[in-house]
Image (cartoon, rainbow, N blue to C red; front, side, top):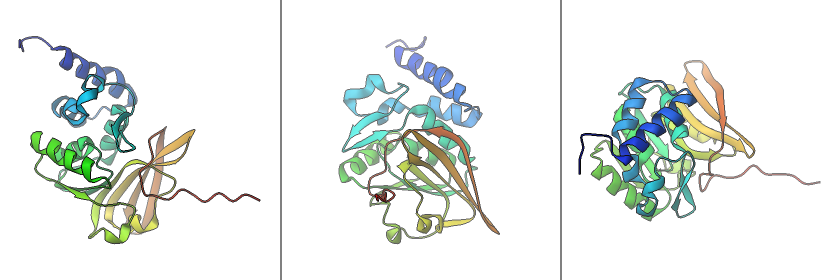
Length: 222
């Protein structure tokens, strides 16, 4: 294979970054560099390798999907990681977002409800030589089972609302990021715990598949 010019794969990766991700205001050079380095195609199911750079959610089996590349990139950018954070991710999927988070933080604990996905993510992360991510088979909606406090909590999927018990796992200065709401409008929600309380911003709208296990809001019919 001739590596002296851009292969079709590298061209597709370049186009993903330039045509999907930059226009979505992902301009942090560290994040853009990561997207060039961490091979997204190695984290998608083998049958879908050719779709690894598409501007859409990618089904990964077991009622789960990878977020669209621009959404993953923007989530990671908006956390403004500095390399010292202990991160909790709920919804490992294939491990790709965990790999990005791991490269920019101190340590990532990532919870995946499906044992087969967790096993595949563990393999994917090992192949990508990401050593500071710990994949656990767990239902992240069972907050009581989550040990310890975190600098950053990432929900890699959408929820109807963020459980207060999860927000309670944030250290002071910590931030939680999640996609909250119902179709047709969901909002990326960033909660920061300050010494005096919580600050919440919702800087952009998107859609994302549901995280399994988290309750829907009850709707009352009269």
